[in-house]
Image 1 (spheres, chains in turn brown, purple):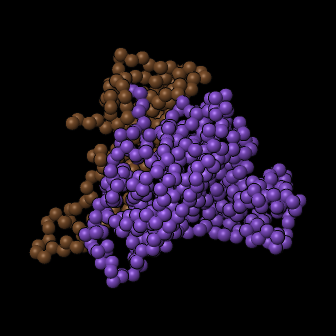
Image 2 (image 1 turned 90 degrees about the vertical axis):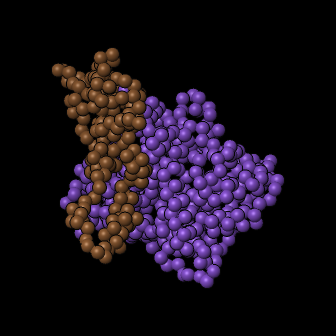
Length: 154
Length: 429
């Protein structure tokens, strides 16, 4: 899966839908003309699941970036040390979104929350880590919204 | 349908790409250096304000660097290429595909004649907003009745903060346009370089308003057809539509060496690597090459060194995209020009006389190259190339991993954040 994602990310949108991409399908449908009985599965054929369309919004391809998490502050949200995160910059961050924020010159992954007075803070999802309230004048920017975490098991 | 063009251009493109992934560079004077860390190829606004010119050799500005804490990055074309692709696709979302022309790595024209109701300023700010959000890059948008005017508008959008990054000349009152054009120097007009600009000034033409008021025919006699066309375009008469993007007619792969190279063997290894890269591009655009050229350079800036800048070409019996054949031709060309006793600092490979793969005449003696086995081998090489990076396998010396003195100097190369799984941006969690 990871390999697949990576290749897609490398080649990007221009590559999709070119002749090279389409040809296996054409081959399957037009050159393997069965001489005997037609396969009973033929009418039910669909394209195989493409994980790209699951982990990213296909309409946001250009806005989708991959980053790698380092640290344990987000384990409660299912993000572990070393996990890859699919970040969508086209999404509007909302109260409760898990975001990549640039805070004082550093990129960090936290949950975005707003206090009653409207001031944002970055909430860690691990009781051993402290939340960070963004003070007036702090360098702070939302880099993107995290859509998926990829966790490797082997 | 009145012609109308928009030019969208990324501000300080390379520096902006570096800043997207390294926020510590935000607000800090930053430059990106050319291949081999030689000279400045991109400057942040802070560096421009210090008066550093494009192309300034890095070693000549060390004083400024120390005084102002200027940061530098080696050029990371893998990253810029991917960010360019993203940006151009986002800009393209606003018009039909055939109305977008990607003009360079960081500039795109949009032909707006099919969108007469689109408000130029509103469209411009939408584009600005979306590119900033999706790609994290700042762009400026200029709208004009011709491409030259769109370029002028873009220049204004960039240089004059009052415009807020978007300038639509088609919506400007004639009087206002006249006033603003009177403040723009002829040298800032698209296509008017330093030489032409000096020429025009000797004729008493200093500003855009003066240039627009000149009879184009008169200028043609003195300065040629390009200037005539430029004046007409400034007067609002479109002289060229969007050019259809054609496959490149020439493919070049060249690099400066990190260390000077002396031996034929080392040059051969470098040249073969470049052939591999050029052949990959060649097959990528579906072409075959008729001629393979190789050139060598010594350091022109070391007058104490003996200088030698040879170039040799080999014509192939039939245009080919076969790496083995191209490599053999390059070897022959290199052997023809190599002379011992020079400090070589750069080598390059150029593929020329490109022909479409489909339109290649079959020759009597090229059966081997065109065989399906051979084609399959080439396709496999391309796949390995695409998957594992460019230097894992190759012809001759090209794939061998060794300490290569000739690989380029890139002291501050940022990671390939978007194209290599091992080099993703690390965020603290």
